[in-house]
Image 1 (cartoon, helix red, strand yellow):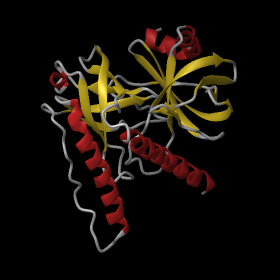
Image 2 (cartoon, one colour):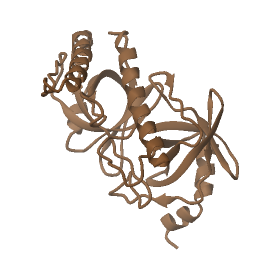
Image 3 (spheres, rainbow, N blue to C red):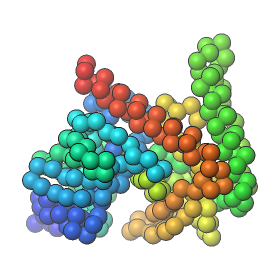
Image 4 (spheres, rainbow, N blue to C red):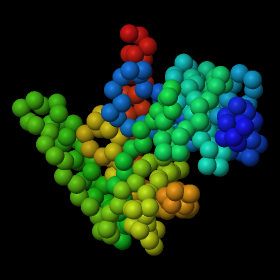
Amino acid sequence: MPASRSRTERWRNCLWQIYERSGAIEISVAREEGGDHAGNDLIWRVKILSLSETEIVVSQPAAFGRTIPLEPGTRLVGAMSVGQNRWMFNTRTLSTKTDSKLHLVMPDKVERCPRRSYYRVSTASVELPDVECWPLLDPSSVVAAEIANEACFRDMVRNRRDPSHPAGTPQHLLPEVGPGFQAKMVNISGGGLGLVVSPQEASGLDRARYLWMRVDLGPDMPVSIALTGRIVHTHMDSAQSVHVGVSYEFGFNPAHREFVISQICGVVSKLLENQDASQAA
């Protein structure tokens, strides 16, 4: 029996192995079945706290140091990885019995992701947000750019509400940066986010310490969210793509933190509203 098939049939052992190593799984809010998947998904990396025959208990999903509340019954897409192998599954929240723990239904089965479709199986899929990145040459120059991003957001929202004033194309102000490159956001957590950069774009990471980023969260957001991050680690996978761990950096403009949090929470609220509407239909 091929090793990959054997692991799929023994997926509970793999899940237990992750738990014993104090590892984590990934979860994201499931979009409505048969609905529009034009938006992008937020994937949280959450630590496994305990396992039973019926439950997976994980840490609460968070972003920018703030917990993201998920009501009981919320449908989720989960994923776990061991080495180069990845499996996805469907689950739902049971309860949040404490502020630090989220209880999930243990899935009946998992499905192995193909190497070329690492975030998609026959029963579930997630769409990774696009991220425009620039090496930041002068971190202090982000203040004006972040203020401009907030102003642009408010202008676009106001224009969308006024039919006589077309929204148009948002104007972006850049801080002092080097040549840009493209990435995908693979997960988000309380202290930072994970990016993956293709081999063709990875040269943009050379000697970069700070990044200026614009994260595209889909059509529900009038403009991309701009934020500053500090690179804390990198590693290359077997396909030569570079995985980048980035910590949030709001020290140059602390006021920008609340704006970013409000936008992320707004995206999550929209996903949950769409799921509730689908279940009620």
